[in-house]
Image 1 (cartoon, each protein chain N blue to C red):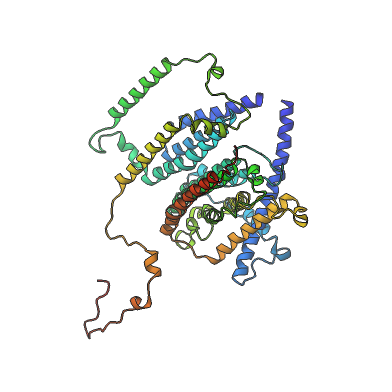
Image 2: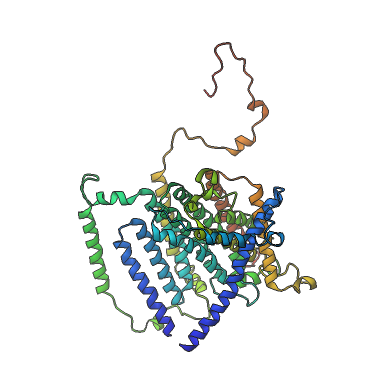
Length: 333
Length: 211
């Protein structure tokens, strides 16, 4: 029992060591998102609080903390309060399996990629619960839309993951990174990377797929009735999910913590920094897409997911597996 | 080991309580939420016995997809309003209680037969034809069994699911008249000549468009 508690203590320490940087970087990433967005539109963006406006998110967080939390009288109280908690928790627990370097991972489990996929597929519940418990038209419509959207795009993400797994032969995220030592998967699986990127946009409800919170039609979608800290938790959870999707993309396709070429100035930089660079690169792409592309119509969204992405990625599974089989490259023999 | 059993009892307790709450709770949406909680705790139990692949698949398939559809249907159909009607004779001429009783009786007797004929093999691990090793991850060992010894059953169950899916689509599909569909090819290949139509308009009569 004593050793159990000592293990527990070190684990809690490790978890804090992981979660605090994640939360801080979520706040920073919101600032980055707004700055990139403003840059594209030739505005300045948040530049007042702190150097370059870096502390804008902290100021916003402080504002949310001091705002009153309003719970609608006709809402389902318990579910209403649980919804942002669920979103936030699910967004944070998936970071446990992301490998930041060799042996630099909180939980190096055998089925890491399945765990990531499972947790991201649970993410829809926060949104449905929030939309349903608000007991109001707009949140409900937003939640229903979001559920349909996330379930559809998860299917294509799952098939894309199968493509990567065929080349790796293991579900472990560290193995996936190590398999990319010679060649990042973005090169042989480039079409899959593009589809993964677009599906990740849809999965995290980012523009141009932000139909669940389309302000022109649904006020603010599922979070219409939320205020104060509860709204901020939805918001933090959403950005943590976006970061997670970027991390997943860099682990699956961009070689995780590996440096692009294994020569001196590059491989001297420690692995975690490479992963952070890659996450930032993907995130800036996310922000640029947000600033440039107009919002999709709902039927176009569904058509893209089911009639284009799913058949194409299924075709690519067949292509990848036949290629690997023909050239006798199948891993794990 | 103590911590292990503590967690085991916590998860099983949550699983049993939420399973009971699925049937007991008055709000249908709450029942679905309890069902989800049940699935999650069952998959935690799977992970605890070392079957992490099954646990994760359970989460992905049941919680991530099936339960979302449950929620979808329950929220859209407004089951709470119809609940009272299901047990009265108002709904479609007859009450559903006799049929329900019959089905539950059949299931009850089936359970009795199964449990009555249940025998524990005294030495299960040694009598298995496949040898279980701790070296190989259980994802790989499931794959080894599923795609070799049981490939036929696996394929057949896949086919049955496919047939069920196609059947459901065929049964519910109906062609609706007057639906305007967008054709990207048509839109992109539109030229100026066909886009603009010059018409000689007659005085006091006008032109009829969109005929």
